[in-house]
Image (cartoon, rainbow, N blue to C red):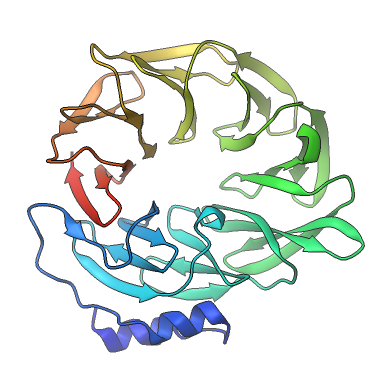
Length: 326
């Protein structure tokens, strides 16, 4: 896409993120590289962006094409832990402003006031939790960047939001309280002491405590719990996977093991994205829902992160990315 066309798409509300993107040097596609592609601003985190890949750092955003070409680069301060991916969009936070960035560079401001506590994005929906006067916090929900409703919270700050592709939500509040929402109505509450994260999965939600994954229906009914040994929990393609050094176990909504991928050598780390993946000393492997290996690839250096999306896997380092296709 010509740089002038990209600039026209990015012109949006006059807040710091929009100004920074408009002023950035937007790069034309470069020839595809056979090895790692340098990213100008580094990669503290990477997210699918349509069929593309967005690499985000505290100093900017770089977007790569399906084949690994650097499409454009924007210099701006980004609060990386507050970023979220909706698959087709990236929710970015810069200097207290929240915006949605589409795969073609279009930007939409998520209007709201107050310091941002956490964010979420799924499909066309997004949510931003902010500090609020007279309340513990307020969570605003959006559809295609337009506000739908705001939920004021009096019982504790919101620590995380899990959001489904049709807009239902589960909020993790102080003290491990879970608040389940159906549109703007409260569906249920549950107390889960020690809860540190909550995720949307197919047909419901998964909450993680120290050593256990607890599953709930969309309406807040507890369905089951997985307490087997694992080191990390990953949500891939709407399902929960319990990852340990020698296996990846796919979990059902009742907390039972549905399938398992086993390894002869220990995994060094686990990827994120649409499919589960594991990084070993000699290769990176991507697995299917049945636990079988779909494809694998070797890299000269061990990836720091792996992101799977659209039949691809991106090996990510601090200053470079290498994309492999199935």
